[in-house]
Image 1 (cartoon, rainbow, N blue to C red):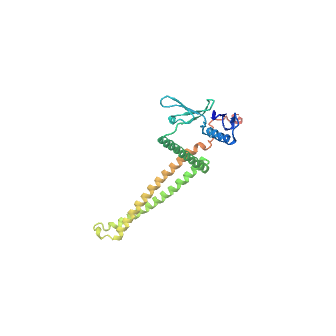
Image 2 (image 1 turned 45 degrees about the vertical axis):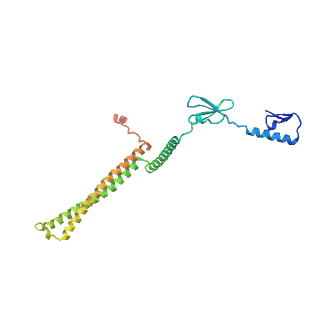
Image 3 (image 1 turned 180 degrees about the vertical axis):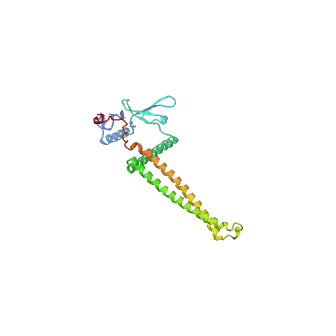
Amino acid sequence: MHLHLNRYTYSAVGAAALQPTTLLPRGLLALVAACLCSLAAAQPTSSGIYTCVDGKGRRITADRPIAECMDRTQKQLSSSGLVKREIAPSLTKDERAAAEEKERVAIERKAREAEEKKLDDALLARYPTRAEHGKERMEALSQVEESIKASAKRSAELAEQNKAVKADLDFYKNDPRRAPASLKRRLEENENSVTEQKRVIAEQEAEKKRVNMRFDEELAKLKPFWPQAAPVSTKVLPPPAAARK
């Protein structure tokens, strides 16, 4: 770049390269240097070359990311023409929302899998062998069976009471209006108690099913982690030598 001032000529590539061909006054020299520095600072700096093929099939090259190719991959080249990196296409609002939703689902899945693994580890620590798991199943079922037996016994008692009350009411079968109110109330209370015991027994039977279902699910999870028992040999061994004699 050459700068001409009146009858003085300066050759410059930058402020540091200012070389006067003729001596100038110091003030004018400082002014020229400042101008050249400003010109150098005003020149755009480039971090590389960007290139892409737009939607119409045109290859575009620029010194900054190309707006026409924001929807497709762009390449950033070095000054020697080598690919420095590839710039992924910018997402639309809907695409960004879809990507965020996909990431959220993935995070939730990982958290769920981690929680399930934690529960499985705790289950294995509680039942390190199949025998211990089976033992606890039997204990849980035994408790339910005891409740059912107690309700069945109470139902049998209520059935006997019901017979006794109805026998007393038979005395008034020719004129039911003469039957004492207390006797009628005893019969009603008895029938309500019978209905209640039937409900309790039905709930306990359902509880048995829930207990078995829970232990069956645990068993399916735990089986792969338990050591397999050695198979029982079915090979028939020959009799001892003394016996053969």
